[in-house]
Length: 301
Image (cartoon, rainbow, N blue to C red; front, side):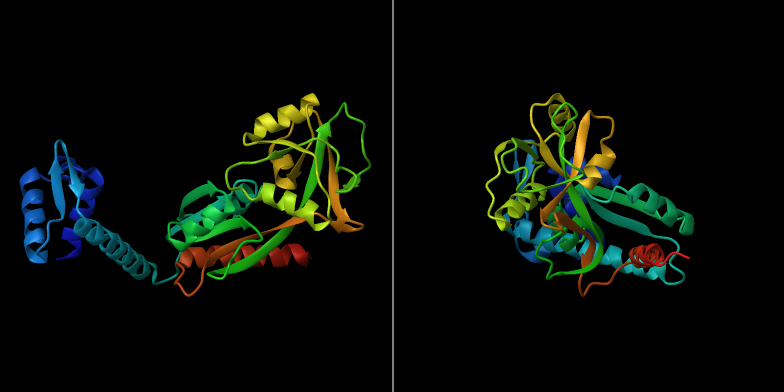
């Protein structure tokens, strides 16, 4: 078997139809059928079973499909590496972004684009744990995530720690510029709960760390609705700073939260990539770009 045959087999499995696979590959149906039969003869195993209009993949076919995907990916990585030998100005940046993190991402990418105008982009937004899986599965090379998470498999560039805020309706009795978790222990709180986001856990863990029992009245997965409910006076909430910067114009008051005394409630944000795995030159350029930007911000002229 060669890589061409394996790619044809991938199309057959994913389309569940010889004719659909032929259309996807811009070929006629007979060569695809003949190739499938030749593969089954070579391997001595039935790879698919015909079931009405569609085909079903056998256990042997599933095993071959798994390895076919890996070999196709390795071939693509080999081609990419060869193409990138040189100055690395061409390439594709694949990056995941946590739902609430990195409000400055548009500005970051704009400046990076000015340095590398030929780079193309694949950007996926999701929660941090899922982004770790995408990096581990090599669907994206880099990901901005909210910490802490189990990161044994990853290299991490720590970017900053983001503060959390209590938000209430403007009509509610105001607190000072900052509040402690103890101050708001009995405040009715509706927490953000976007699936797997991690923010809900961070908030609960912060209260638990100071042996406090917050009055949680519920969760809301829709952030715009959450902001509207807070604005109406229905509840208060706790959100990271990025959310406030992204959702302006609501009738709310925001007060920074300290954990205890002068210890603030914060959540670290970092950029991760897979350890012991070759990074594309584009991804490495992006990491270097971020590090230089952070050093410039820390030591302005």
